[in-house]
Length: 421
Image 1 (cartoon, rainbow, N blue to C red):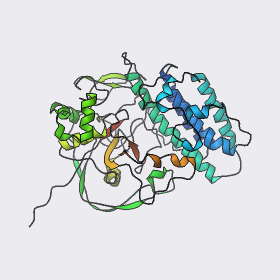
Image 2: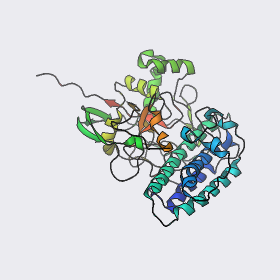
Image 3: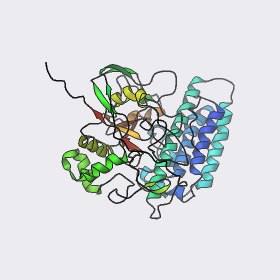
């Protein structure tokens, strides 16, 4: 099932609310209760926790303040399923989410049903409330973020199992032809970046503002596995001159010699949510850190684009996104094989506030601004990003050593200087 329909939720519509909430349950449905409880590292959250946390968001920020007479499903769930909203109370440590055996999967489902029924009553109230509608829209987009996190986290969980089980059935790949990347010339000048229009955006996409760019070139496709195999074969993981100091330290400390989920030295197979598969040179390389992306770019004679260069060129790159719960893996084909949306693409930009940025008032203001340090920006979306949750101005962010997200890279270059006359 490939989903291409735009599911971007209207601000306060019961049907759209249900569509987003039901997709979360559909994504969790192939998983056993045991699958949904495992936490394979500190940065991974159990599936059961994602289902409960997104429910807690609606209960805490929508129902308790706005639905008279609403009683919380359980008095202690606020402590268990708060993530990082310090303003609303204490929380269970992130690294210990996997030790929570109770509530179980069935009680988590009952929690979701309880909150969904109350949300339906709230959304069906006759009087319009623009502030409430905006908060519902934020909650739905927040849940869409966790749908992507659910998939990337369960991939890490299942990959840690020596049996290498599959999340979904293996599908046949379409044979694709590897080709070298071509570089698209981009003129310098003044560009507007940031969210524009009346649709939803997160606060970190605002305010829209003007940036000045020099001339640059941007690859017409992401780096693929064939490119990265050449980097490995040329000793890329053993050449300190290619690496930032912190990156080289991580290579040495962790024994990196290939992207995450590649077996051995990268010569044989890659673990996917469909189980282990042979490496396809035409597929975008996935699960690389910022450090690996930067080292590859240096080896290839290029650099990482800034997030503003990426956004300014995004309309020319085409849209290669497709979302299918039956095939959550980048492919080399499709109508726009070089387009965006196969892998989140690392940029060279630190995650910092835009000029004039103001976080939202209240507890929801902790959503993005508090993380604007020690992170790098990624753009474009990936195969785990649900439909309706991508736009050119979307600023994802992760620490530079993160490898478990669906992360790849597209290379930029500076044009050759013209000879003086």
